[in-house]
Image (spheres, rainbow over the protein chains, first blue to last red):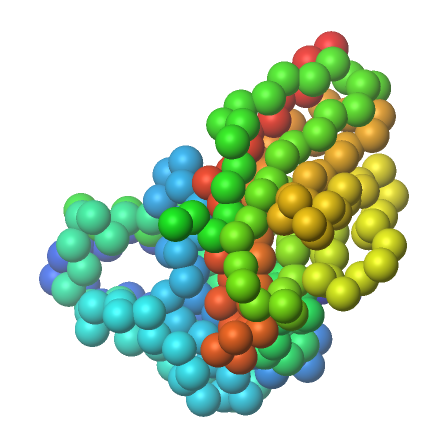
Length: 114
Length: 116
């Protein structure tokens, strides 16, 4: 089983709203990732959690706030987003960090900011 | 400089034919992994195949095989006996060991369309 579950599948929010994206895996993976993907572009890495600690922040604006409450869960808290933040947000996990480890992705959350 | 280059923005193939999707990469790290992912219009990124830089054999997974030419720094994906369900965007990606190997760098993708 290589399932990564993301909720919600779709989200529409205003620029003053606060919302959260959720990602869950039960594969015992110790590395989890958030990516942002604009239409017809490759995914861009946002954050990496390794053993529940934030190990990479790719200079993401503070209106995006990641959280890893436990080894199975990854959240992305959204506040005061801009219309240009509209995108597909993908979560991934891998058994461990490291170049040999395969990242398995969820189906993503399609976010629209009005 | 681009770390991963996919020069074919779009490809067409007849059903049941084989197709090769090109990928070249650039790294000075001797230890790296190369990955191919499929992304249908639904959005999910589906892992297809992995090749390690030290692997002697080309990777194969069912109808997918990776033509790994290390000296040329190429890692082309070959799909045999194409099916209509293979129509999707295909991304080549690389993870280098430098910096802990956490970053997966993607190419710009190739949109494959399988026709009857």
